Length: 489
Image (cartoon, rainbow, N blue to C red; front, side):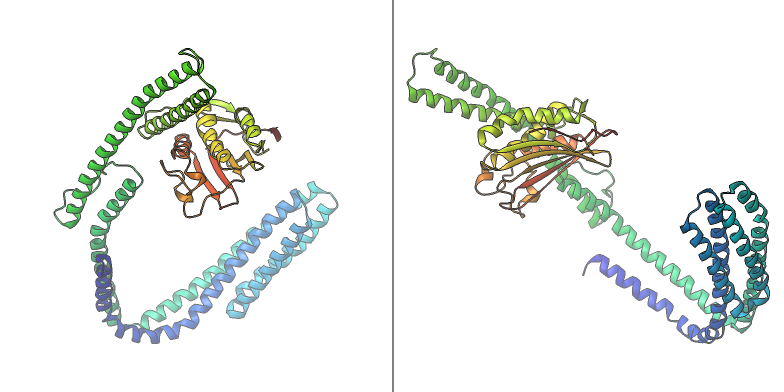
């Protein structure tokens, strides 16, 4: 059994014990309740009916004013409905014994109904000025009717006070003292129980939030944890702080190692690539056709290694906060044009149908880092889409807008991603799938997510095996809409 369950159980037991003396008093008070219950029902019905009449008159006044300004059949029906509702509620007041005070209101309501008919005729004849003047003249009827409703309310109040006095006379002072004592004890027990729960649950809640931050990758020890407590919660908090500080140190060392290793790898890769180019150009002597082909493969592999190292460096810098965005105002159409020009040749080579589309809902412009959005965000998403879409398939980038956001959808008809792997595809080094999607270092989508989050946006994906993948990117945008058009295919 958890601590919380024990505390709640104790609180329930204490509450039942404190309430035990009230049971006898409740039995006696039940008799009084039976006596006054019927009368209370009458008072509630009277108050409710009076309130509905007042509301109907208020609505009638509003609909009449609206009808003069913008007459319509709907308003005429609303006016008649409110008159009918007021009559019905007045009849209820009469039925429960308030006919003497309800009759004058009924008479005023007759006057208002006649006036309403005349007002409708004036408006129908397009005599708006006369209708306005006539409406002003009948305003006094509304005012007098409201004063009559106040008389009804006073009558209801008087009956209520009379019933209250009768109830007081029936009540026994001993029962009153018992009930008061019980409720005071109950309040004290509840206050004590809640204070105890708060004393335990508040620090545990803070600790849970701090753990959630650590689970999300933020290795910063919270300053509001109860480190000074001498109980188990204090011990747990101090252990958690030590663990967080150690994780932060390990994460920093890992980032430094990856950054240094990636940087150091670039120099030998460039040297390898340089020698391969020199040999391929014949600078170091003639090469055979097979050697030429081997050198081309060496160059391709060196280029891929350079790309992987650059991705790793970029991701490390993003996680360390070392990369700053250079925001500028960019037209949405220009972003799509950059993407189209960058990938249309690859699409032609791979035999894939590629297109970009600009919806009419898309914002005209957006404040973004143009290079990172086109090359490292959309570029990585499209590289994945082309990589896993076979010849004859389709890849589409669509830009749209909603709630002052720019929304990109990168859609492919490739192999898709298994549902159980979909939540992890934006994690660094994660490679979905056991076949085609194992190609690469697993950094492209992680970099894309970092860029989106740095812009204050969100990224998500939908996919299913053999049904393709759709990645949605939401970026905060400016107001303004671009005209609908096709950017090109």
